[in-house]
Image 1: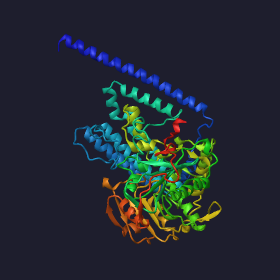
Image 2: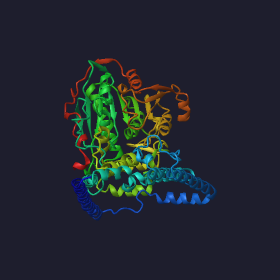
Image 3: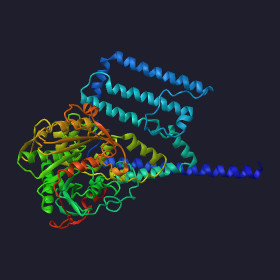
Image 4: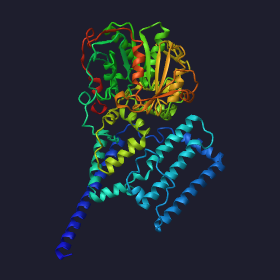
Length: 604
């Protein structure tokens, strides 16, 4: 190499070193700014952080006692862990000494994307870190999951928060242990960390001092422009909801209209995400007149709303207006998630008072029996309710609280994945309509939310026959209309077994059709037939006591359950009539999707 080449090489190295040093200085400065922003937000917070906001200490104290009562089992499990770790060390030592690549002692579960970078398998150091972590994680989750005797609620809480700890401690979450982060930092001379910390600062600002991790490009999508596009009109509104009537897509429609009651925990446009994924659009194409409740994103103005006022001003008033608009004597009520819990109360009350305006009731992944109410139940007990009440002193629960809770259900995918991608690798998240919807969180009206957590999650009052709505005692067996009940096989929010158990309590329903769909709480419901994804199970015998027994006798059918549902609805929808244009009687407030759904919590 000539002197000139050596000089150029030295100059290049000096330039790279200078660029790296400049970027590291920027990283240091931005890090200091972020810490100051966090401290300022904490000092301004009128409610300092609780030592144990999710009330985990009592459950873990019970676990500690259980472990002490089972020393032999703990010794056996610990010995198995150390034996596995010793075997891992033996194999890795042989590989370091030149032997062929050993068979792994532990491997990531199918679908675990954390260790997809080649270096996690190719580099012996990183491979050892990965496998050692996986062995320890399996041990900790096993101990939390089944050692000793714990009450079911304590066991669920211990297992859930142990999983949170295990996910947080993954070596992929630490820059110095993540080969992809190290490789990217060297290649980009630290520019990735500069970009990432700037994104973190922006997310802190967006969350007003709380880290609000972006999961997609928030500027890429807009409700009414890129999603919620099905044509329709807002034909009625009050201070808690807008009622949308969608335009017909056929010359004639079924006489009996549909009224959809979505959850207010999320925004309705998951059912009208894009034209290709829209349940609403598909229903209009099947010849149904579709009405939908669009809940307001609440603030102080909804501080006095209650569970009963939400029922009266929501589905009850919407049903009245839908029938007034169409002139039909009855409407099918379709309900999703917490909207189903509210609709169950309404239909039980209507049956008790002789109100026959509902032709049927469809439940989409909705709980009515909360004995085993899924992972969300770990957030609810008397102590956590008191803390939630403090957060709702202005009359509503901030949307960030609900967003954080839902993200914790899949922390590895919805939190730590984006910490690594956004803040370490400095990459903008991929634009994805579903994740935009997931990030478009809603606040909760305080009294409504407290009632829901206390009376359903804590007390299970409805299924126990201990609830009254508008002075009318109600329980599941009071529902007296045909019921179509959909659960999804991998649902952690409304577990399929709990949904099935609640469905079987509806003994007053003249017909009950239970359908189990593949996938989870969202993808299992929003599964258009054209996509030819997943599958569903049907069983004409609705008598098996448990879901496994029901499933043993069920027929598995490829693809979406929507056609089965549409056929079921059509057979109960009367004659065909001329298509109805939205607002012919009620008039028009504004075009769909309306203004209520467009209000974001971070826009004031």
